[in-house]
Image (spheres, rainbow, N blue to C red):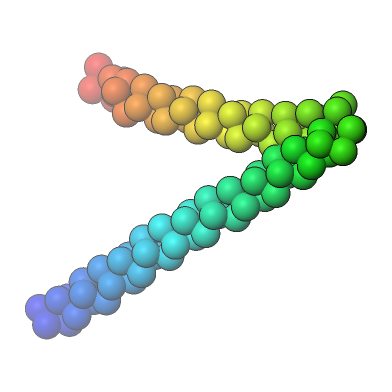
Length: 94
């Protein structure tokens, strides 16, 4: 019986480890893709400015930068909200 529990525990831990590794891989891949998309848009904006399309070029540069900034601000908001939720006192003990 104990051997079965130990086998189940090892199996569950290996599944959890694989899930964590997959999540890390997915996040890393997403960051690389976001970087490539943003750099492509920024370089495209610089090219547009260089050929005389200032308004379109600056808009093409500004939009990806503002999107990146927005994602960063939102992620910081979520981190702070999660920290506040973790520090909130439990009402169950009262």
